[in-house]
Length: 438
Ligand code: SF4
Ligand code: SF4
Image (tube, rainbow, N blue to C red):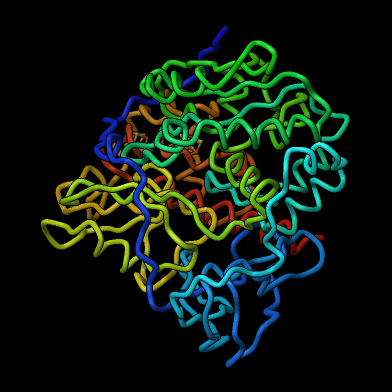
């Protein structure tokens, strides 16, 4: 049974790349691999200028909440230096000159089914860590930590194949073209968490993907495909948990608090690649689309490819007004297109001046529409006002930290007030103030 969450919106889907099969993106000559690609401690580089590296070789790692990063091609390290990053800052990065030989690292060895069957949950989690696997829906939380913290607490596994953001079709294509790999990764998660059942949740606007998954499954697998009504933000973790189980994650709580663990579809595929093929996370599917894009595509892209290179691959009919890492609802505007794609980038969205989000000096009309749209039952208009006070206590009083940055409020707002952008910075101000108090 599917439960319908409060609020939400129905933006125009614009899934113009949905019928474009995944294409291999030609490897660029230069790749930039940032040491910060996940939530937690950034990696420290393990290579220096002049070193030769192989494809899949570990080139950065660190202690604590961290997963390693790997070379996505073979070649020579041209530099280890600060480079532009999707976050809008610069971060330490390893720049690789591609030799186009794709010489594979000798640590990348495939495993047979018998090998995999013999592995313990601890060994599997260690392989997943060493493979640099993180949440690939954008959260980039280290997957081995999510798994280990869920041990004994989780009774429900949900694979998030919702992909409710306009324009993005990368998970849809993955489900349609590689359902076996996705389900194989899910079975590894089930083994680690000691559960015999799981859900794959998908919206009803992706019937081909739901069918492809269902055709891969037998009753003995214990996996159900839950087809949910398309409504934004169905793919947000808390809303998806509610839609599948009827359980509400408490304010400030994690999914494990209600016995759930949610994994993105692409993450499941990455787990399969890592465990069976011995391949770390060095490539991913990226949708390159947008209202001024001439040839929208779903591309299998080596991590470290620049946004500039991806934009060239699709062409655009006018000067972009905005280029986003991600979709138009939750994506972050890019200020430097030489920045590389990282593990959490599922899409590049290129928008023209006539898109809904292009407003120069918006003024709140106090209409209250944003309150009806918020799936977290917040009052965005009051949060916006609280932000202008610049007082962390006032921001806390309107539950700013519960905002999941889904963008429903901004989408509904007739004045196009940039609410999400405002709340993103408000949450940072609040977190900094809380950290300073400790
Ligand atoms: S306030 Fe936050 S959670 Fe609510 S609609 Fe706006 S972006 Fe989404
Ligand atoms: S929807 Fe926009 S204009 Fe209306 S109250 Fe909310 S912020 Fe103000």
